[in-house]
Amino acid sequence: MRLLLLLPVVIPFLTAILALLFNQRRAAQRALGVIGSVGLLVAGIMLLAVVWTRGIQVTQLGGWPAPYGITFVADLFSAIMVLLAGIMGLTVTVYSLVTIDAEREKYGYYPLVQILLMGVCGAFLTGDIFNLYVWFEVLLIASFVLLALGSERAQMEGAIKYVTLNLISSAFFLAAIGLLYAEAGTLNMADLSRKLLELPQQGLVTTVATLFLIAFGIKAAMFPLFFWLPASYHTPPTAVAAIFAGLLTKVGVYALVRTFTLIFVNNVAYTHTIILTAAGLTMIVGVLGALAQTEIRRILSFLIVSHIGFAVMGLGIYTPPGIAGSVFYVIEDMIVLTALFLVSGVIRVLGGSDRLDQLGGLYASAPGVAALFFIPALSLAGVPPLSGFFAKLALLEAGIAAQQYAIVATAIIASILTLLTIVRFWSEVFWKPVPLAAGALGNGQGMLLMHGRDALFLWTPIVVMVALIVAIGLAAGPVFGLAQAAGQQLFDPVEYMRVVLGGLS
Image (cartoon, rainbow, N blue to C red; front, side):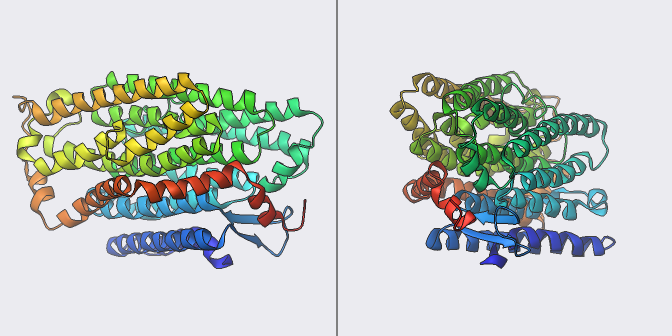
């Protein structure tokens, strides 16, 4: 099982190296990108199957036992996230075969995507808080280059904002790690869980927890630290924006869930109340920002922010049903947002613009695109029987059971405003007549997308993502059962600590 734990990191790493060796051969890089992504997906499926049937898996690199060595560990939440990373990586890579230009491919687009996936999977599987920082920096470097690749003015402006705020987050993260090590003498997360509760100065632990909350809050784009996301995610190519939307911010959510269920549980009344309050504000501010925008990807960027609030709502409630609801919500939200960004790229080509006032008539001219947008959009708003409805229902039930009525009301209001945003989007893009000034509808590139030889690479990822949204809605019971098992492991980490630390107690 040791190799299986390492495969999600090793596969994209080796793929990136091989792709760089073929940097003058575009076809080889494209093929390696797809093959590496398929390998990661297969590794993710195998890892989740093993963790589900055999329990939490761990390996200690270098032969050093925990807490002294480098620990890789996979519980159900980690394995789910690795599998989702494989799905995102493969769908976006296939979509990129049609949508990424030769210039970006020449400068290492496919190796960079693989390095990004390596950093993401490393963050999901590490059992050490310092190595979590290292993997964050790996994915930060890759994501910054992907964001800036092409060197367009808007891209460079967005990339500078992105990297500046994330470097500030990294500074908070590193400072918090230093204080944590000085206080506990260990950085193994399972060992920290054991030692922090025994420290006499619990006030200092709460202070360090607040620093981690700021660091991960920036990376997850929570209120009031979210403003870098809508300033940058609308600038890169659609494929890059899609993998950022579906995967990158969820690494911050993962870090919050992991650390504030395993490590920082000494003062739940303080830390998790802050998380719950920030979750509610993130929901409302994000969706209000979306309502104020007139460009497609800016609207979607603010909706990402809003639904980060839903993803951490269950963590703030901090009950087993609440954490299970957060896990379920993360699963469906990653798929929904990726699908919406992929569809937005098609809309841009067919309509010739990103602006709502310059679009129209797509329901008549491209009904298939309308359907592929309609399903994930309604799921995002929480309309039954799609996956988003069941994810939000699980969170609302957890909030009511915990008597957290304010966050329940906030979530309902945010969902209604999301639906209003979707209705406005639908009306502007699909129902209203084509504006007289819009001349790009039905252009040559659009016809190629609809009927050309590359259409399979463009449409298959979108159809697959939309089918997954429908499938999760139809199989909500089994998926939520998986989320409940993952939530129980997170809420009660005794088994995680036992597997990682062995005989230590």
